[in-house]
Length: 170
Image 1 (cartoon, rainbow, N blue to C red):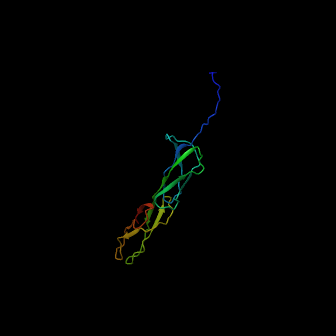
Image 2: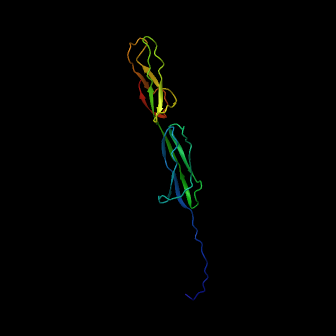
Image 3: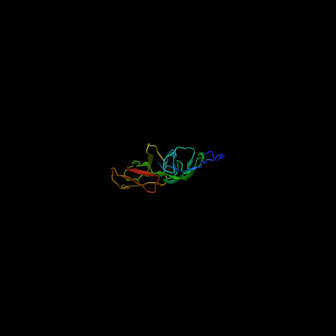
């Protein structure tokens, strides 16, 4: 309309940070193994996974951490400033590792005391390992037992709970 003389004033479009949630992915590993790679997922406000990187992620657990749950902490790190982030920590669960406790075979002459009963503990790779506590060893043989074979029975005793034990009698 040419009935007016117009003056144009430019406006400003302000882009603000969009909300996003950074969630540490829960992880599980057996006792006495290295921690798995720690990862996280970022989602926008609609729940859609978005690709941004740079969050700082860590856990207090290390290879020697006992069976249990440990926090996985996620923080800002070098994430870009296009989002306003909410951080949700995760959990690293350390589970029992498999181990085999084997009673060692023994022998002795008739009418003598039994030798000390011993055992070995091996991990799933067959390597001898040291564990806390001790297994319980028993036998039905005593000094007056006749010539023959007698079982040496091995049981949990006070062995720690970092392993899921399989017991092999001698």
